Length: 238
Image: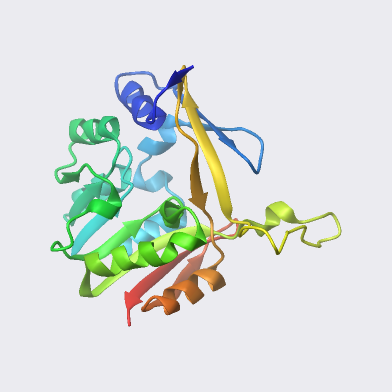
């Protein structure tokens, strides 16, 4: 197995080059292996879930699209005559976005973005809060968000409450209350002979997210619920 930190970026590159059946294998410590068709990362606005459509419609002013991937959200915003900056750490994914016509690409770790640049909307979709990795990192995450937001700006982010994965047949929850938060999941992605490094990703219920936001100087408003325990929320500076 080829150890590479960027199976997703390489898969996007191959898809753009003509491999329309490219698939990424997603392994986790919680559920069985899953398959992510790379074509999903190239979906059009009409193919997006309703929460994503809603978030893109609400995005205004100078927009930062964090974890932009293949650029599907940034491209729609551009085509809607909105000013968007696509932030993505993957060099291959950034190359794909460039080939697709994304104009403003910031290839770097989200946490290293210069804080003199302020944004009216910070957009984090496809369980964008996951970038925090675990609840212990939420203070650092919110500190970075606050440093990048314009005075009246907002963060639009989605997540899911995955407690349904722990439900027993009788409806009771089999959760270890003395362990880590149940939404902290470890993932490994692989594509062909490329295996990425294992990383943590956070899924968080709306009540806990609201609590952490309040603790860190932000006010959370739920915008809408999705069809499968997911939700979209808007966070603003207090």
